[in-house]
Each structure stands twice: as C-alpha cells, then as structure tokens.
Image (cartoon, rainbow, N blue to C red; front, side, top):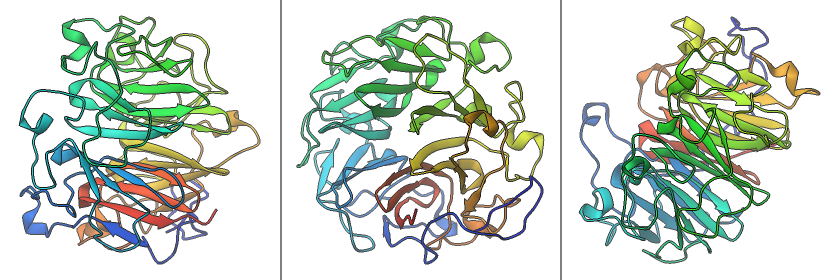
Length: 395
C-alpha cells in the first residue's frame, strides 16, 4: 500500500484508508493456481467471477452478482465471518444449480451474466447484461427468487435480444448493460455494448421506459465506439460503472483506459466531460498510456468506481489494484492527475495479480471489477480470485 507524488515514483508513502490488516471478511473461496481453468461448482459459499456487489446499509443486507454462476446471492445482514454462506439466491432454483436464465427462458427471476447493482431508494437495480436489460425490485428482496417488478431495455420480462433485435440502438433498448447507478431520483445505466450512458431524469415507472438523455453518442440510435472516430471528451468505448463525486458525474470508460468526470450532472445529450483520469488528454486511449508498466497516473481497463467522503476510488482492474484520488479544490485540476493512493500492489509500477502472481491474501487483488463503499465498509468484487472482500474503510 503506497501513494506516489510523480508518475514514475515507486516510493512508499501514506495509505489509501483501508485497514492495514486487509479484508475483515472474505466471501467465496479461492482457486489454487493449477485449478484456474476449472469452474467452481455453485454452493451457498462459492462464487465464480463475481463482478458486482451492493451493501444496502452499514449493517446489511448484502447482495452480490455471482456472475459466472448466473445468479444473485443475498445475505440478510452484513457478513461477519469468512466464507459465510448466503441466505438467499435469485436466478437459480437453489444454491446448487447454475446456467444462463437457469437453463431456461428469461423471466422475472432469471439472470444471464449479472454485473453491476445498486440500491435505488427502497429498491434494488441489477444490470442483467446478457439479457440486455436492467431488472428493478421496488423493495430490496428479502427472500430467494423474489420476482423483479420492472424491466428496462426490453418491453417485457421474456424478450432478451440486444437492442430488441435491431441493428440500431434506441432510447428504450440496450446491448450489454454492465453498470447501473441511482442518484437523487435519477437512474444511470452504462449501456456498454452501445458505447453510451443512458440517463432517466426521474426514476422509471414502466417496463421498457425510454431514457431521457444519452452521453457518449450524438443521438439515441448511434452505437459506434468513440462515436465512429477518435476519442474525445464526449465519446466512450466501453463504459462500465458510474458514481457521483460531490455532485460531479464519474464514469469508468474501461475501453479507453480512463475515468471521465463531468462538472455537475449533464443535462444535454452528448455533453463532453470536463477531465479524464488515466490519460494525458481526451485523445489518448492506450492501456497504461502506451507503456507496459503502470504508473500513478495510468489505468488499464478500469471497470469500477466508488466514492467515500473526499475520496474517489477506482478499480484499476487489469492492473489488479485500487487507486484513490482526493477531492481537489477544482475538478479541472484533475486532468491526468496522479493518484493520491494505491492498494493491492506494493508500488505504483506493479500490475501482477495477487502481487507476484501468488496465492491470494487478505490484502491482494486479482482483476477487481467492482467497488462500492457504504459507511465504513468497502465492498470489493475481487473477480479473478472468485471472492468478495469486505474491507474496513477509515475515511
């Protein structure tokens, strides 16, 4: 755990405010190196490549997208022990089955590659990526296989074609939506396969309700990566997660190896962001800024973003680390800024999984896809280690 005060430094300084003891609780089990190609059988304890998690409150409940098993796992309260079994499952008939849409047809209780999730008021929203839809429960489920109340991206709970079978996108269609976020009555969806972010100004109330705004594309029907041209302050290649940092919209644009930040919440289609993290300018898109080894200012496939107080935390996924930036006096000063802190690697120039490609430890990471922070708990979907970490955040 270290921070750097220039892009090439590897000096150890102060820490990202996560407990020095590593994760307090580890959910799921880890693979041995020789087993990396062998899928993990589903049980109430095991996970296979979880890509998202959502802590409803500081004491629970907790929901996890167990992505590789095509299910959601729920814990009634914040887990307090390693490998604690889940209390509930959604997406499969029981804890011991797996398969896309439970090896059947889509419905109100099935999922196919679930990823991001968030609390939305009293409810829960889940990005059901390969069904090309968002599922919404008006109240956070408190049992197994509670049916969803609302679907976006599809006209009903049965259909699951990308963009509803069209070659074009539209305001009411989706293609591989991987991220979902709720803020002050607004809903944001990272419609990843359409290379755009959709915004509902007011929380949707009808199935298939069209979005009101689009970012990343000039209109609601376009879907080319980076708008069909070179990257700009307005374009996206592979947007994946969303948060709001002191009223400023933040989007992880993993395909361009950057994080986009707007001043405030955009109110017009295709509004350009104010700054990017991870790249020197809006037009650079190379992994780790075109250098093999990362630095304190570069990113490689950043899939997750979260905030806690003055901190913006980024899951720098392919570098197997979390980076943190502190809130500046002006958002504009963040353009290409050096991170304030790092965790998961011994220096800002390292990128190996579990540090030196070793077995996972309580403070190591292997392709972390998702990070959320609620109160004093950071919830990290440590996907490559087939686990979720509950780590004390001491901001």
